[in-house]
Length: 242
Ligand code: F6R
Image (cartoon, rainbow, N blue to C red):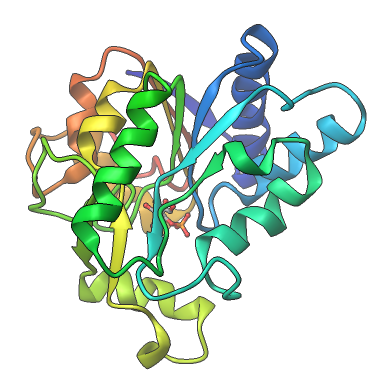
């Protein structure tokens, strides 16, 4: 693991965007694994800015997102598809038919998970996987105690994740209880993983994930076994680390 210390959120975002930009510049056909949530917004802002200045071209890239809420269509304001469009896809030239997210409206979870795993496989896996981290150290929606070896699956969200995500909805009752999530398998098979974290509420997750034992109770801890992981965390997120 390479740990890059950032001063704050802006510094983390700039450093992460530089790594993604380098990936796309070196291999324009890169398969990017992307995340939603508050953490990558600043990173996406830099990528949009550099694309708009003509410094980056996503025309040959592919993106495969980590997750999507079950029950929400891609048009729903809180769907992850909509988040990706608003924060990235609508402002860059990544082809719409090569930007993949699970289909939250598909009620047959077995079918949808198999379809998503096939997409990942057909693209020969992910070149660079961007990850945020939950307060309970989840990555994607791989919650504590979920299987380390699984593929895309339907997840029942934990109370802590529902509580953390309530801020994006009118009230807690509106937060979907299930999601489709890429599994640990695809994340671990990514050629490079870039995990970003900012703020004191991530300090415990960062300490447990990278300075504690590898256990399914701390999902991100499995990344200690990946051979090319970059963690960019700001001072607040690193406050509890040795
Ligand atoms: C989002 C995702 C989640 C988030 C995590 C952190 O696609 O996979 O694992 O990365 O919940 O969310 P934020 O960045 O909002 O703190």
